[in-house]
Image (cartoon, rainbow, N blue to C red):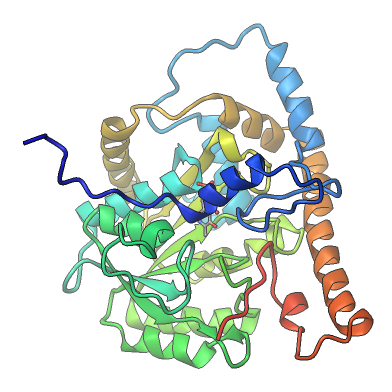
Length: 379
Ligand code: PLP
């Protein structure tokens, strides 16, 4: 018999399939509402002006070569990236408790974080991760029986954890009645889970609902997490994209660090620097002390070595330039405001057209109440 004849044919990823179909379509007014990538007023991808500037600097830098980066990545990049998400004055950074590893964008950070937990987390029962319902790549209320099944095909958070032997379970998050947060359901899930459970939380601009807890709700969530000794697996793919303000969008992560909750953060520069294809990201593990941080780093290095050996250099150099140069950093913040501002304005305009202009029946307030690139309403 032929060797691979029993390999089932997997369906293509629905989002990237849509992108290919969109590219092939010749209709001039076509619009792609599938993939989460920013488009400008002309419906075109936007190369950030600050990225163009940084690219030119790199091109003219005769000292650069194509040698391997260290296993854990470009140190100037990871150090600055940690400050960006945790805050420049973060006590955890000052105390040398933060381990930062450069990853293949946010997806790679999620994978490395999940892999690390699968090897070293002290599970209280079976290895499980609590994911919001819905979450990245997964339709609301769909419970995939097999990630290769037709519907579970782009259930990325689910697949990432399954791939390393951690079983995803869901916590209540979206409330179809309010088209908002099911806060009580979320709190009940936190309370009902066994102590020391692992909860994946979206740091801001929740994908796919655009529904985030308020600061007061975040505080209540943190309180239950503390009392149940849960571990927080933060996924932060949209810092700056939600509000236009990098610090504001990192608020929840910083609150948890301040409260001394055990956590890690997956960070992506795909959206906020428009570096989708460059795959720039980092995994930050906040540890109780330097000694533990060193152990964690040593094991992350071992895992990274067997997976990718060394992360790619170009995108990390670009982001490192931007983060470490005061002028470029200010310029980047303005570019982020351009993107976030346009998204917020588009939401307002769509709301206005639906309600005032077209008098469309129903309540459309969720379009302006939700945040980031996604608009979500599902019964
Ligand atoms: N996590 C969430 C919630 C996302 O929405 C995304 C991108 O859509 C990612 C992680 C990772 O994206 P990337 O690997 O391109 O950084």
